[in-house]
Amino acid sequence: MRKAGPLHVRDSSRLPRRAPVPTHHPEAVLDVVVPVFNEEADLEPSVRRLHAHLRETFPYPFRITVTDNASTDRTPQRAARLAHEFPEVVSLKLAEKGRGRALSHAWSLSPAPVLAYMDVDLSTDLNALLPLVAPLISGHSDIAIGTRLAPGSRVVRGPKREITSRCYNALLRSTLAVGFSDAQCGFKAVRRDVAERLLPLVQDSGWFFDTELLVIAERAGLRIHEVPVDWVDDPDSRVDLLATALADLRGIVRIGGALGRGAFRPAAVLGRGAAEVTDGPMRQLVRFGAVGAVSTLANLLLYAALRPLTGAQAANALALLVCAVANTAANRRLTFGHGGRGHALRHQGRGLVVFLIGLALTAGSLAVLHHEAPTATHHTELLVLLAANLAATLLRFVLFRMWVFRA
Image 1: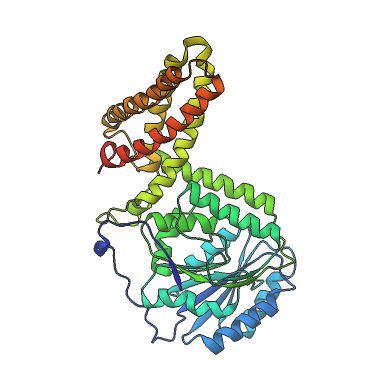
Image 2: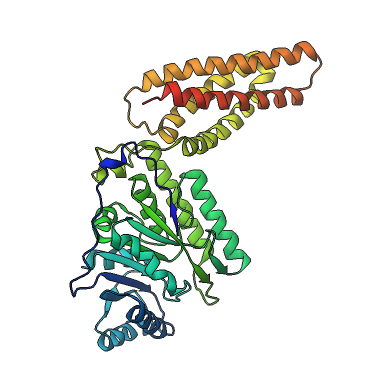
């Protein structure tokens, strides 16, 4: 099994150790929540199949909670009939839609020490269920997720869903620097003591619920275990890809904005104060690169606008100065996690020194170009500036990490 790397923790020995889940009592050790909306046709065969699988393969007491959120067909009646037939099945009904709302409600009410959920279509092979929850029962991990994007996974689905899934997870890695590979696979589990801390922090009640929960958990330094799964796409799935994608993008912007403002500190909320959670250099480099790409584009556009008015050297200096101040502020919050106003002036002062070094590098490049090729075109100037800015960006990252924002 493959485990997603959590955020680097400077003193992992201070993180609370998870005790194994007690399994010797008659109460349910595992509660599998099945959120449903208008699933009267698929609900009964899926729950019967899941119940039979757990009865045959799961060695401890279990529970299945069917959580209906505002169905308008006979899904609630089907769920109630299953609950009457099987002592291990519980039926809940919510008046409002939202997968995240259904999961949060069911998990909050459950007494089981390990909480899981899966989609009602059972697209994920149930043989992965025991490997999913075993690390939580043993105390090895805090959260476990199924992944369709890991080596060892076997996935059958159309190209549209495949491309959408990969693009979404690539977007998460590039914008929020997450370490887990598959945010939206409907096959996850969490320890109840962890869920009690995480659920109050999650704002989304729809499809982004999974992603937000995982981002908070990873930022808090919790262990996320990944299990490669076999997964077959449900051809009758009624998920609106466009609406879901737009909602996910809004969620990414909201979480990214909170991180940027320093208002999103799950490590402190989860009581991890003694263990300082920080990003490693590779994740910092990814975010620094994203900020740098925007800064470089802004610098070139500003230079192009100022060049006819001030000349090449003055336009380069002004454009670089404006972008450097904005770049330092953005990296201070987004890349190196410094929120609030503490040491802001010191950071900007050191950033100004880095700016002067970058100015010397880019100005020197223009000077060499004009000396060697006095008739160089405006297009050539831009290409030289682009190359010089890339070199200055790499140097800026090293100086930012080792000096400007050094802890």
